Length: 195
Ligand SMILES: C[S@@+](CC[C@H](N)C(=O)[O-])C[C@H]1O[C@@H](n2cnc3c(N)ncnc32)[C@H](O)[C@@H]1O
Image (cartoon, rainbow, N blue to C red; front, side, top):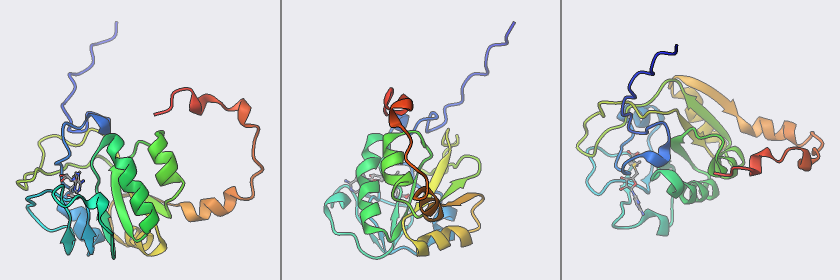
């Protein structure tokens, strides 16, 4: 007989980013330090325990409505909301996003796989921080990925020393151009349960 599974630890991500209880989980400072400096963090808490960039926009200013400039750090609000932030960063190009590695989702396909220059899939699970600067007791409950939208930011991922697997999607796109399109009717599964 199968043993009952161990009681689930309450990871802050509960395995899926959309189940994060709120948006106020901050990037571990060692990640920012390994990748920085950044000119702008457009989605920052109102009261932050440390700087993530030279300029910060919070909910008060609404970073989505602002013009973005320079090198951007973007750990966006979770779940469905992340889509518009990734879209804006993909258009801006000069920056790095940190999101959950939900590689099957529409958001990931449209704005990460499709638009990124390269990515670093982080080994293990991150432990995020509260706005008071306290490390969460549990890890995030799921995998995270850093996404670079141009070559210089991709080089920052390579040089960061952050443990994980790096992929150069720019190279992939060159290969993919040489592949003949398949008969899409044979591969409908992706549209059966879009998320
Ligand atoms: C996942 S946290 C990341 C915080 C910080 N950027 C970091 O990397 O540590 C997302 C942040 O976005 C902020 N936020 C949500 N909506 C926003 C908006 N419209 N404009 C600016 N910031 C927003 C939240 O308050 C929250 O602090």
